[in-house]
Image 1 (cartoon, one colour):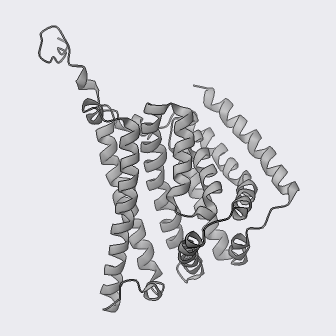
Image 2 (image 1 turned 135 degrees about the vertical axis):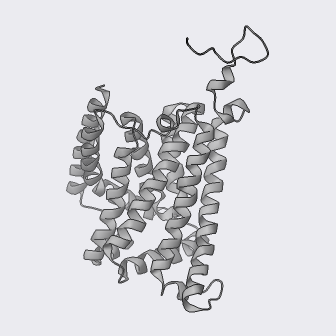
Image 3 (image 1 turned 45 degrees about the horizontal axis):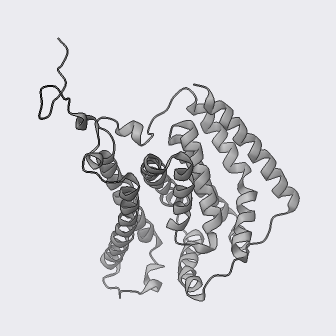
Length: 309
């Protein structure tokens, strides 16, 4: 005998809340939940990661003064471990808990697009081609971004971050350790946060087009580097689009991993590339044109394959 429907308050009216998420039952707008959690997760990630970094360095050396960045640069492995721990705790694990409250009961996997289908393998291969082909275009957007005037205060804020990245890549840490902490962990955690949770919440309130654009731009600003906000936002929009078209986080994760991991490997093997990126020069017009043509073709192919179901 089939199970009887659940009822609330009346023998004739089924309880529709049984199929609604916790936030829906309590009247929270999805876009507001997404924004609030993004701010909280980013803040907690930075706070806990920073505190853990000082604790670990203190345990290793015995003493450290708050704000003593010179001491931290001598322990780059602990800096990366602390950063990765903060991401895993708040952008990853805690976001899964919030998503559980935002998803319809029993639908968490589909809600976050943590799934695959018969198209995912082909779309993942196309994603590899797209991220490789678009690199000169990202390079061009970085150059355009460098032409925009920034307040001196913001440039001063970015200086230590850029210097820290350069010291990380110039350190004697192994490529595997760097790729794990700079590429793999951010790829997992940021994709769950932005393309899994945030885009879905914005999509429910504003529709998919605005959700793709907004989540991509927020991804750009999330990294707190206004000198790179245009290329990072463009990359975020691309990641959101491939996630929506594929219905899976896997292609976006692959793009993210190759983009970050490739930069790490290239900078370790060819340090002069890091100096070139800091100079923000314009790529050759022929290289840029080729990038646009090949990227456009691969994106159109991705669109056609993603329509097959």
